[in-house]
Structure formats: structure tokens, C-alpha cells
Length: 196
Image (cartoon, rainbow, N blue to C red; front, side):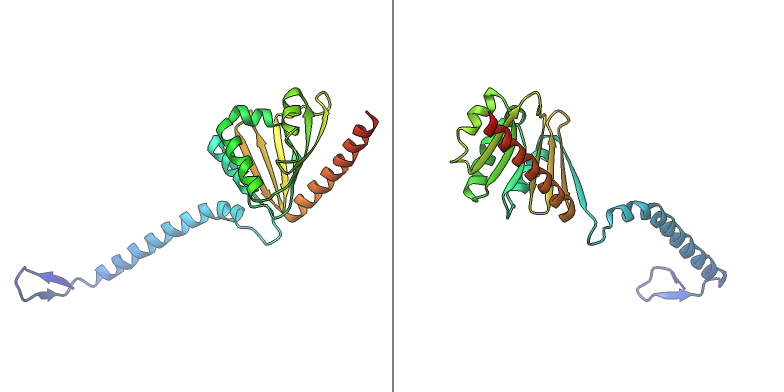
């Protein structure tokens, strides 16, 4: 049906029955276009979809992204363990370093870290007790870090300062394995420290 004229009383006239076929064909074409688009998106959506056990991996870029990754560590229910060198962080995002640390302390989140033995790190470890941290320093020739790795709860956080990149992996199994590796390294650095 199509309206006939523009009077106050609307009159309708019957359309050619062939138009209903054209309308149906048009609807089929629209549905096929949607189906084609869905098929194109399916692989991407499948890669995003995860099963319960499958790890979640998130990438963060730039200084703001790195800040986001560090802010996630402030949600830690357990202590944070890892490998770090504070110097690249202070150079890369100096204002954030001095914002982050008081927040971690205020939340009572303890930390243990294995770090390169540098004059800069000696200044940092002097504040270990008041900053709720335990540190072990390893000769720079053996541990020359330009990245930071933090392990907490069921997460592993990594930051590459040179590449301006942060990665957050959420996986109970990966975090457990990384904690075990850290504990082995922590024990080994304790033995090295006792010998020297």
C-alpha cells in the first residue's frame, strides 16, 4: 500500500504485487551482508573469547598505559614479588614513581624484589623497612635489568621501559610458576649474600 495525495483524510492505493518480491529480496540482501560481516568478525571474536582456564593477556602502550599496569598492582591481596630496577622507572615517569609508592605503602602491600647492585639501588634499599619491602641485590653483570616483572595474586605484570610497553597476564598457573621461580632465585641470592 502507498499513500495517495496529501489531503487530511489519507487514501491508499494497492501496489503491484511484484513489489513484495522485491522487498523480500532486499531483506535477504541485507541479511546476507550482515552474515558476511559476522563471518569476517568471527575469528577476532573467537580470539577474544576465553574459557575459564584460559589466561587473559592485556597490552598497554605509552606512559599512561604503563601507569595503568602499575596501578593494577595496587589491587594485590598478596605480597608483590619480582625483579626490578627503579632507575628506569624514575627516569621514564618520575612523577608517578613518587605517587605510586605511598599508595602501595598506605594499602599495606608488602614487596620483595631482586635487583641489580648499583649505587642508585643502594639508595633505594636503605628505605626498605619503611617502604614495606625486602630487597636482594645481585651483581649488575649477572642481572642487568631494563624491565620490571611483578608477580602477585594470579597475575604477572611486565614493563619494558625502552619499548614503552606494559603487559599484564592473568593466569593462576602462570603466576604460580613465576612465584616458584622467584622463590628459587630469592633463596639463591640469599646464599650468595651469606657467602660475601
